[in-house]
Image (cartoon, helix red, strand yellow):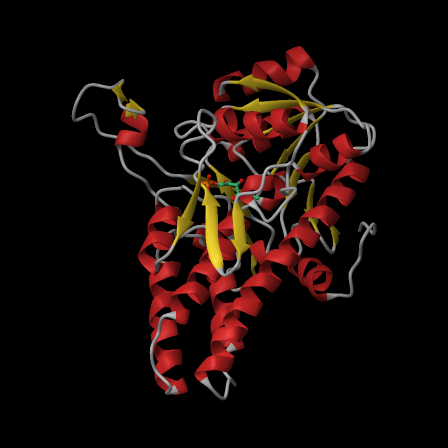
Length: 353
Ligand SMILES: CSC[C@@H](O)[C@@H](O)C(=O)COP(=O)(O)O
């Protein structure tokens, strides 16, 4: 039983698992240019907030290696241009802009181009390693919160392949599996692109976790019929008041959790917080192509030319969220000061407020 990995940096080469082809084909692709990295993110070959950030960071470092100048000022200028290009590949997950900003800042003081090139790779590696550690911690804390729960629902894929390793919302299931702790996971299929059906089900099966697939519209019935005890989801951006953008359909689950009186947990690393935005209404919501809704794969399901609204994310207000599980501790949202204090304090593992 294995926990799959989606972004690999080895011998200065960037390789990604093409998540569009899952679960039928497990294909790893080596990305060589900035354009290929941009395209891979835009097309969702690599997806999930932390994984996008990690892939973009390596992509920027990779492209920078080819900038042929000895002028460090000019080099920085070119890296900044590449950075802006990569950040534009997807708008909602803040981890992308966060990771890229870390690399751009890292070379601010570099004395030579050689030094700056090495620093970019080092910083990308740090971002990856920190994310793996963060996800493990999130998993530990989530396991504690879910100590008396067995039947848990999730949506989309906030798993190992959406991060460096372990995932956020799926981390407790991976860690639980390592320790013989059994969960029954209910995965919403996640229309229109089926990240739940294609990715979460596949990933959890690879790891040997008990997983059952439902369509998104079965969630309300299933909570009652199967006795779901908690819902746990990932996040693409969390604002200063705790409002959380995540895959479209997440808000439905939060409202259902509220109606059924079961906990609704958001699991996300600190890199997913955007304290520059006060509330979720300021989060840019990606809208994707009409064909994603009007067709399934190559099979058209709606009449040709049908008007379609296809937002990829929704925003769950903080008051529907029982707790946000970060690597630094468990935050009960709805209070900016509490959120800030928790995020920037010394690691608070295990502490709840
Ligand atoms: C740990 S991944 C967290 C989120 O990025 C995830 O829940 C999600 O909504 C992903 O959306 P996607 O469009 O597949 O990139």
